[in-house]
Image 1 (cartoon, rainbow over the protein chains, first blue to last red):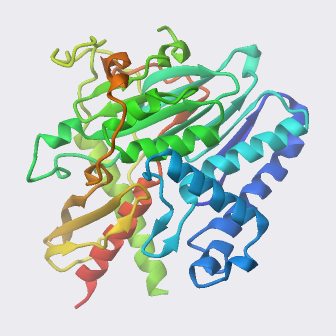
Image 2 (image 1 turned 135 degrees about the vertical axis):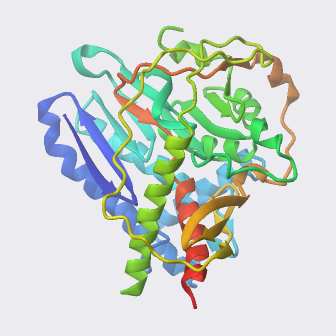
Length: 246
Length: 158
């Protein structure tokens, strides 16, 4: 049983196996709405918008301070590639999505819901198993054809997140270095111990270009699958163990 | 009110544009790959896809833009900048070029080269669509929409 709602400008889906868990759907979607109210840079009255128009740090909520601290920690862990400061404004959305999904997943676990996944804008936190006690399966979308899946992985309580560009074609090229299109990273999917870790490292590693996959390889507990413009996938040494029919 | 209308038009154009791209690039599905990057991918007959292509929006707004090339604003796609230019021909968008994309991040980074030999490669290949849930990128498109919106607003100004 699953439900999808459009929140934070993206579809958010919660699927549960036990009928008794349905009553928690509202709590979860309400939580995402609350997150959006606080962190949306598109809402003028959100706390983040107030901060960007001069709200002094002494008036920030404790949660906001904690989130900004997580962003700063991530910046240091990613050679500065994860950076929420742009043109004097803060935008923590690259971390908030994974963080919020992870929090929502913990809310369900605290309600003794064990078998579920939560997906928001292509990032996923799973728990337990799917129907008939089979593992949750996650398809990695083809960046060249968004209707198609190019890899299937199974996860238990891990998180998965993808960063990438799916808009391409002959119109999108680098006129100075046409061959560069072939080596450009189209998408980078990261599997981590939870979606918070997967999301923040997927965001940062994607920004590193082709080096991103090497960066993920060096981090224990993370695996990644990178698709480049030549339609070749490069993946980390431990990725195989998640692959169906590997 | 004009803002909303413009937003709506841009939304429709964006959906139409992505649909067109999708059609244009129904590329051959690639056969099981090898670990070598030198191998040339062989088209296969596999036809597993997730769904049929969604129908194009029926109420297409045929906005009459002024012909020319319009450069959109630089939008932050979080890990880099996205900027597009729209070429308008006969009042319609003929081409959208990416002037800046996140891949072209000029910063360099030191990453332990030791990681390289452990990485593996394969050609991408269509799989069964029978999965619980799909992972994919979403948010770059926001920056794309913003930059294109900016370019098109210039095309409508007289």
